Length: 397
Image 1: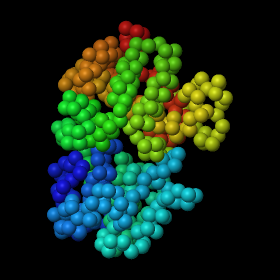
Image 2: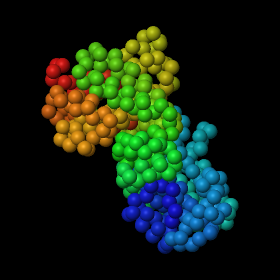
Image 3: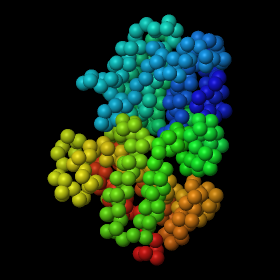
Image 4: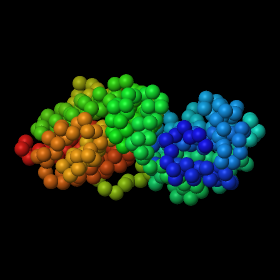
């Protein structure tokens, strides 16, 4: 089977077995963001809709159906992704395409007369109503219909949804495979491809986006160096510098991600664990903010930036921050495990005077901060908590 995704041997074998036998009516593809879940879902869709081969020989890659899937215009391939300021997959209505619309489309006869496939991108962003509306279709799908759910966090799906799907887990790809993918698409020269493969830790989708987005890598490096500089900074400098950090992180998020794909989903309930100083819940986006000249305790000009965008910017900063903290934790033990060797000297200097275990402890804070961000807390206050908790060099204390 000619995969477009960077495939792992176990995943490829599982997909081939599905195509050779009786295809499951629902498949859950789970894994970290940007590891290739949607690309694999499209590969499976090509195989299921292919009319030029049979069994595990599908897809042929040349028949009419394969070409239509590749061009994104196959009438029997239905796709649904998060929409709107909250970045959710909803039940439908009020002008937003949702689960009810998808279910209605699947109730119609196939246009090409064969199979039908529905792909739900970022399925972990379905709210409870949408998941409940999908259950009946998962239990009794229309004939020759396969639903493919792609989820970064499968625990956000209801147990009743997960239990009705065959599960595929995709882990990070080998560094060499990511390098080969970038080279095959002529996206980066060999040194840059090697760096991006390590930097993204085997997530081919993220490596491709960095390679395609002009200016993304310099902003990433700027964020890393600023975070390292803050290790020796005073509280006042940290608080003032945080505003610039999150603004640049917002620019990076805009380069790497479609707007609707990164807005966090409000959690169904409060998760366990909290940052030591817990911010208050943020008011809805429609609530008028403070006058622009008084917006000194939030993001700059926050009144003009929707809350979803501010959370999106902080989520991107936390992602970069997490990688920096991880590298600070390992650089003194095994420098070869550092994700970005080009920043090795800066990382070694930053880690030299840190309190013992400080970087590891902060990684836990970042994880809890991500969870709190999903519960709709005010990103301004959460950022202040994090920047003040960022370990400080003993020499600067």
